[in-house]
Length: 440
Image (cartoon, rainbow, N blue to C red; front, top):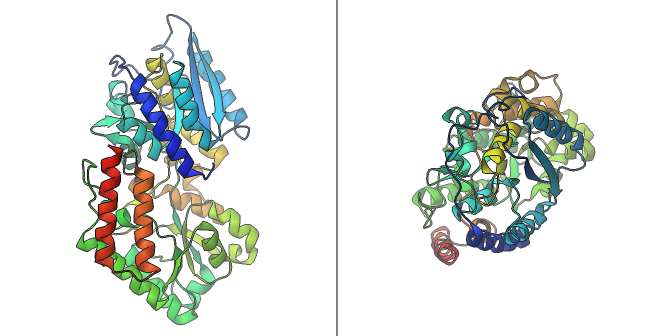
């Protein structure tokens, strides 16, 4: 996946304007989409025998050529069980999806099923550019996904995406440092408060810091502080609770319990590899980096479920499937998306892609419950155990990226440059409200 999010956001806003101009309604066919109601690969064939040949255009992000065999086999399976329906699969780089959507919609050739992350699925949905899936899904289907992940793209009571593959952070611990501090890694911290106490004891006993972190907007919702109000029309983070959270973070940095740095992922890898910190809060992909950069540290690392903050949730990073409002085959498109995201197919994809599923039934599979004792297996089990508390937190407005950037700059000003907490929150609140007003 690419990293040029600024240019992607700009082109996405152009896309949404064009999509809005081209949007039109589709009929309500709620309850007829049973292609994803069970894990059986062939379900839905009886419900969807197309009266006329239907060709679905299916777009994904950066999955070719790695997963060609998986998708080609799945598409063949789907086509054989759905007479008259064919699927054309196209794959594009992350930064190209928005421009492709713009071009195809402007020419009247909208794709039928598109892979988007939660942030941009919510943005398109808020502009009326995506199908409201409530009109097509049964209650059983909607409830088959983890609630927090499914609801991440429900805006105003309308569901704009089917959650697909996802990931959650886990807590990696340097077992040597933890034991040197007199702590028992077999009884890891369960809450952020307990993690702080463990980090403090590690620092006092070993001289290493507890952990490094990046100063980003997700620090607010983890602590139960909403970024925007419920109808997403104004900032809601400028509260005494936010002041207390930032004050504690500043104090922990002064103590040396948390590194005083706005540490991006590469820096976090560096600090953990060098045993300058005892803990790492990250997704399982972190393993690949320390295995290469610090094999001795890798051998001494264990993974446990991530301690939760005051909101008692864990943040996920999900990919979704959406159906553009201008799909010429909305019924068949939703059925295909439901098929791809049913429990059996999500489990199968997780096995080949080493991702987590968003389907509740999937994590009952031994693949997500059994461990061979390796760090990779420990991380997989720990992260799958976190899915019941997972939510993909995005603010669901066209200017989400700008809002997140404003909050990050505010945290940097306070924690790195010593700015006054209240004055900075006031300033960022005004900036965020201006961003919202300009984007509405």
